[in-house]
Image 1 (tube, rainbow, N blue to C red):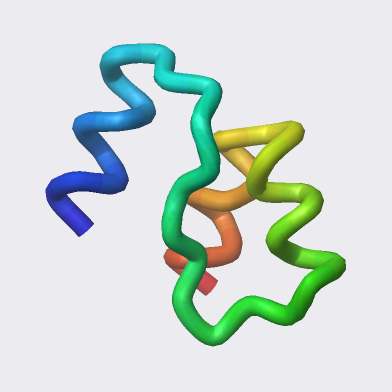
Image 2 (image 1 turned 60 degrees about the vertical axis):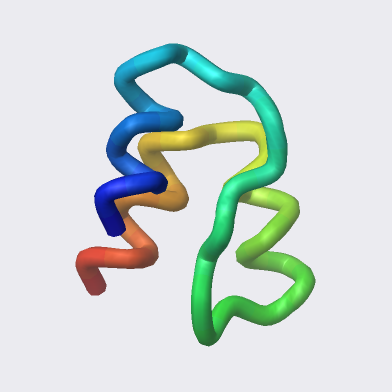
Length: 42
């Protein structure tokens, strides 16, 4: 999770890990890092 947060802080727009996510959720992650953060907290 630390690497994930570091990517958010640096504003990196690269693909980030969303464990337990299906393809649809991964598309959301790529477009919206904060959506990915919500998915990881859920």
